[in-house]
Length: 178
Image 1 (cartoon, rainbow, N blue to C red):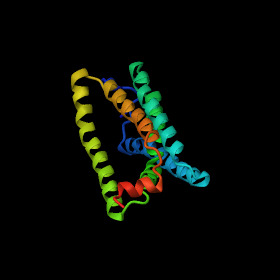
Image 2: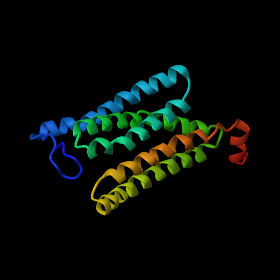
Image 3: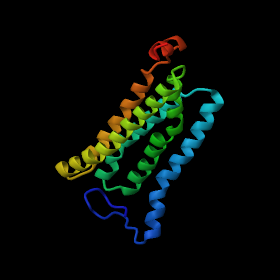
Image 4: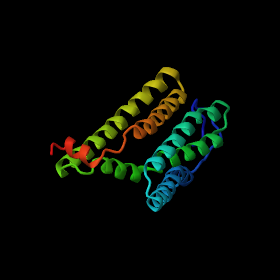
């Protein structure tokens, strides 16, 4: 189970329960970060930096995951995977409430369309990302380029989020056609 991307066996895990437990670790860390980040964001009434900083963290860590792989250090790569999941998954609930806050003041039908648009973009990214990773793996024989591409995409998110701005109520009503 723990093997370097080139197929060279690292520290092998020989049982299915151990493999299942290992795959749960990044997600459990992401859930813990999600809950702690949501609690702190609500406590201090701030969303923007709680989203951007975690995305920045996740993107940077995701970009350095290939370094231990290159040096046949699967345990370090797994630790970095867990840390990147903390960054990428830690702001899942806050980002949706932030986007819905940007649409505040709009007609409810337009808010529903905004949520549908956001989900559509996310699903397109999830669908095409898998194919792009497969293409890069086939072209290079390694997963390094895929990790760098995913990290770069995650690093673009804080900039896009920071540039989103906070529309005033009057500008939101103007966009709603009122």
